[in-house]
Image (cartoon, rainbow, N blue to C red; front, side):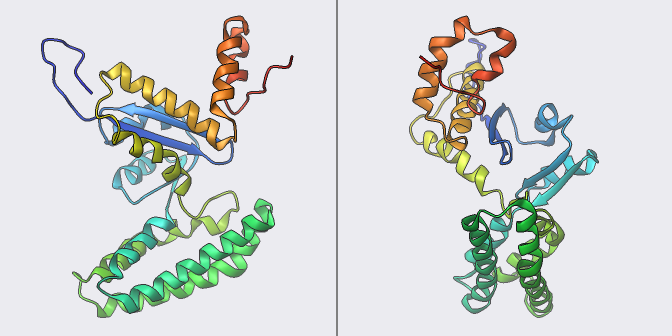
Length: 257
């Protein structure tokens, strides 16, 4: 972003923080100047519930300060560490990856069967928990014999430090095993960086965040963004201000003739 003060004209980095609610089917991008925990205060100040993140320590500190927040970790990030170690320790890495693949096969089955949250919880308790317990035991055994600098040791240590939070999804069918939904939501941002380098200004970055939020919510709500935008632009001037939320993508109903 370029500084809006014309006398300075300095360029600095800005960050889009993505918040994704899989249950209510909402996506929200928040533009911030940095990546510190202060950048979450406006969004998470009054939040009560569970946040799922990667292993970045900022999220852990936020959850530690706000007792009403439970932070859990992403199984896909743990799996990725073993995938990165495969080049150096193929046998050990393959063993762990096989266990992760088995967990995800169970998740696919639950999704294909259209199971309820309670049913998903039971399947996870019956099938996923034993696999995870076995994997945990294996990691502890391997950790005793490997050098600290070994790539597979780094992968194992990442999981062991976060084990309870990695397995938290097995306790509630509403939870995902990973934060891949967020990864999918930020993909357009990553692609966009290849097409444009600057937001132009702080306000420009904030507007980008709003657009990404609205279109991201369209996508997760299976709403055609062009049809939604065309309809909303035609209706918004005459729509009652106290019912403006009806025009948001997750609430939107096309105008009837």
